[in-house]
Image (cartoon, rainbow, N blue to C red; front, side, top):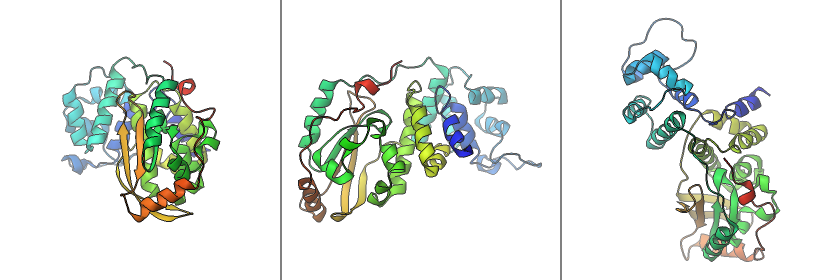
Length: 308
């Protein structure tokens, strides 16, 4: 019960992933020696850098840093953000996430993503159906919007999944079959959690993030552990090894492309090199399922878009 409450409470505030919680998480990972400070005597109640140590290393007052953790600092300068990122040893993705959170904490909320119109989805579906390999479009939070026949053969019949569960987080953490499908399941799952963290920072007004985090945390201890790490990632690309019960191992190329007209939608493909054994296996899988019907009822389109 305690773990479940932790997963929900971390997303209960308006921004879901506040600047303060991110800063506290990252300073807990460092020691004074990591930032050129000598160890001070005395018992430390919590691991990592103290607030005054981080503030000193960054070159700001302790009072100002405390306001940052509380989300009350206004107009945080890019120079301070850059200094924090260097001191906390953030990678480029984490640095961008810190900038986003600091902007969300110091400015008025931005209107969330636009509603996805049915006509737009029909156009994208035509594109997805024409693609080689498994292809699909995800919307905010990793919701599945449209997919092609090969994706059905590879990942399962998403048309039979209730709309509220037609989400990559649910598949990865609450559907056991996906853990055996992805040979590198831990990496895929971590990528999704990092994406959801990053998305929530960009879209603090999306009120569906909190309930999603609670649902995933309720069904998966591992999700709760990953969520608490505050890692941030962008959707990746590269090689992915899958194992399908009907055709065995598949050596695939994975691409995620942001759709310019839809800021939080990605076109994703899993395809194989032409003429390869994996390409023949994908074709075999595609022929094993019938052509797709219309978009299923409950598909997370306009009715599930967040409203300000």
